[in-house]
Image 1 (spheres, rainbow, N blue to C red):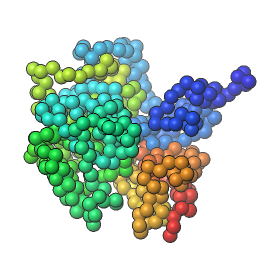
Image 2 (cartoon, protein in one colour; image 1 turned 180 degrees about the vertical axis):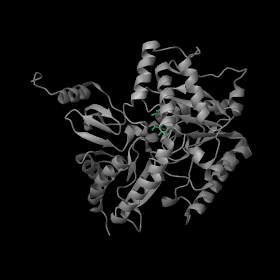
Image 3 (spheres, helix red, strand yellow; image 1 turned 60 degrees about the vertical axis):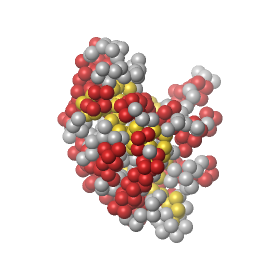
Image 4 (cartoon, helix red, strand yellow; image 1 turned 135 degrees about the horizontal axis):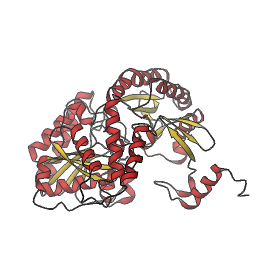
Length: 450
Ligand code: PLP
């Protein structure tokens, strides 16, 4: 029978026999066999095309197979594929120069990692050694990665199986106007109360024990929570008052997602450390890193930094980052993303919300949007309970199935769908996806109680 086995069947069979998948009960998954991808689309091995409203894991910011970035990787592969981190090398120094150039002023050095979790591990280590303090404050409703330290910092259920986590990690509530922990009546009050709560947390934990506040400037997977005006500036002031390092986790929000190089640019706030990955080179080759303030870099001028990775500053990854940043500039992608968000995605999603009672809230910016799905708009009861799985998650599973049947690959998390296409997506492609969302929301509307 293996002689007549289709390519798709063979990939599937070998995958199920030998690949151990992330975050999954291995016996309960059926991964889609993918053949190829281009721009905003990918195709499965049966030839079905999907418009990708997820950018994979919200990382393919430049779209699939961008020819300039592919060519840069090919050129680099022909020249030098690998080099230990201790050497100086053109692709590496050029990538660091460009990343520092697009970063807020005063962040001039880059420590390269292979991804986001390692970036956060190293940022926290730098903050602890710089301050001589141990505690780190991290937000509930956050994701910081799956290594030991990063999962302990994470503020969602993915942390639970790894507990007890890391001593010294303290979680606090960030602002979330739609489901406020502070019973705020509007966005401004939400921002003020979230800041007052963070100040109280700092006071009772003991400011002299706190090395860092770590936050996603715009919270990603946990809801695309855009901070109220003044919130990030307030956190910056609080950190300055107590000598606490502010770490911005820009792994998802950075490199174009918010229509800025870094999300903090939208609020004019400069962190002490920025962690990045994903959009820096769209994951064409694994890459992440930490952008380091001059003051923190000075701590390690005469004292060794105790950390490193065999593949730190990998030539293929760095060459792809250089090409990707050049493409962002030459194609005007930040402007494109801002315009798409303001003129096409935002208005389009708000129009869907008017027609579909299962849409509770629309929020976001750039190519970074969430629809919060509810059973009842008045009570805001989520369409599925927090952290639902199995039959409890059925309405969301039905939504996903409806999208996929019509050729759209949607991002879902709890009771939300996120609209997070590549930064290079066209207005017409967005409209094509919105039309499919329109059909799929008729499915979720059936679960509403009003
Ligand atoms: N931080 C944020 C905000 C993320 O969204 C992610 C991944 O989704 C990470 C960190 C972890 O990055 P990685 O999976 O590259 O380790």
